[in-house]
Amino acid sequence: MNGAHWHLVVNHLPIIFPIIGVIIMITGLISKSEAVKRTAFMMFIIGALAAIAAMNTGEDAEHVVENISGITKNYIETHEESAEVFSILSYILGGISLIGLWASYKQKFFSAWITIISLIFAGVVLFYAKDTGTTGGEIRHTEIRENGNIPPSNNENKSYEDRD
View 1 (cartoon, rainbow, N blue to C red):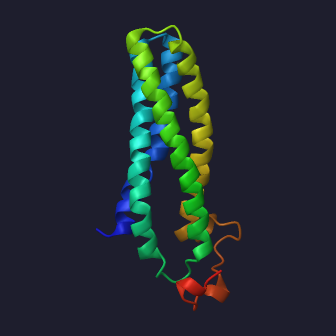
View 2 (view 1 turned 60 degrees about the horizontal axis):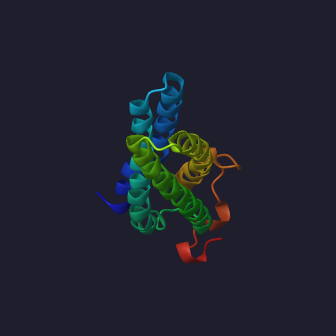
View 3 (view 1 turned 90 degrees about the horizontal axis):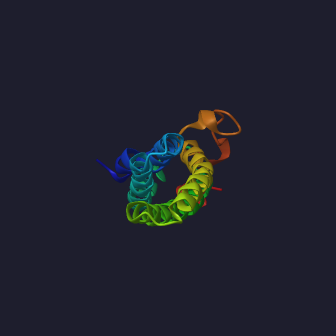
């Protein structure tokens, strides 16, 4: 497996885990179950760890796709910038969730606030997750680009370094 393949294997996880975490957290709030809320915190923590894996495989993926015809440097850089913001936010959510997990186990008075804060922050993370996923998809999926499936005709024959 090459670098792009590894990136494709792990890059969906930092998006999926927070989605699952939000669903579980809402369930925990409705059922008033600390065990369910702790599970949601774990999903957010695992999502942060998955973001580390996705970021670590991104550079190798870039080296593979930069040599593919029709791939412009602009799409890769846009995705890379979006992924950096998303990963930082994922790490912060993971940190908040660690505090929430600890507060839940220790039955701290602020445990309920951490739960609400993590749920709201997870919404922010998911907003950036959507952007990162979309910009990543645009690299190879011309059909989701704003200009449809029209390939960048003036860039097809240029080398990666010379592209817009």
